[in-house]
Image (tube, rainbow, N blue to C red):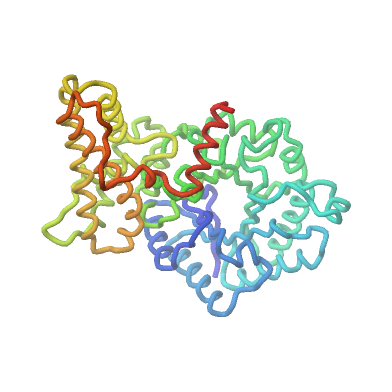
Length: 448
């Protein structure tokens, strides 16, 4: 079996923490990629035990058959399949046995038909064991030596093979003191084989924007165009989030400055339909500044998957509003923004000044509640379960706000506190982590 890595890889990297996607979901993803004209998929689920934590262990016969079936299905659709391995948690760079273990693992995947690979050193301690430091001197030197050796070995074992590399410093915010003067990145640029493709997430781990100047700075240090590992839609760092907004914050010229763009999206597979299709639309016409039409088309196409038991139904307007509330990590969408503005106006002014804001607030609230009720009747239960927790949380908040607005309107002059019997303040933003988040917010704001 032979697979050719495209000159400019575009598609999805399954590189998140959390429950990996099922094979059925991956087959569906390959169909999405093919339909959208995207060309690449990288297998890198952090919580596949043998991808990261137990990377030395070979796959069993049944596991090998599964990965082989994914490679065959991917190649059949014209999608390049790459296998990633992440040995950085405990790799001994100076131990020949660990380099042999790395080669043995990839040799097993080569036999399955894979010809493209990724070596990942992200999210690991920025230190070396004494023996490794004695032999290599620095983390960058140890990683580059391993990657170069692997690249040369792959060239002998699998003609035309490709190797991606994820550095430990994989975004601008991690570089010390900055990208241009990072000793780690400079040394990688000096020592890493020029054929190796390097991942970069942009200025931040979750980059709301990726300016062209930031990529040019990277190129001047690493001496190559990066492959963007784009975490715009990622939500493994906060599972209360889900992102279904348009592919935004990337200038039209980004493609010319890079060697590929791959989305590392939501953990919930079925929530990625709009992100994947929106990204594909941007690639086809990156010069367009108005992203809403393509985003609307993606939502309309997604709507066809919401097969509902009669007499229930979901409208395009309701689904788009739901996507507005999920949207992107840096901001809500237009509909959610309007809802928040209306709510702030209701909070800060007496009911006699509410005018049409109250009625619009109520219409939007009813649309959200109707959507939730309809979601319960979706025939595709996997799709429902991908969205359920987020729809439930939104529904609960809207019910409470709606009750408050009605109470405030009916009691404009009351001095009593709003105290609904069915909702306790202790239930808001629950868990100890939520309390820690509030402390962290105070720290970041400069409070003592």
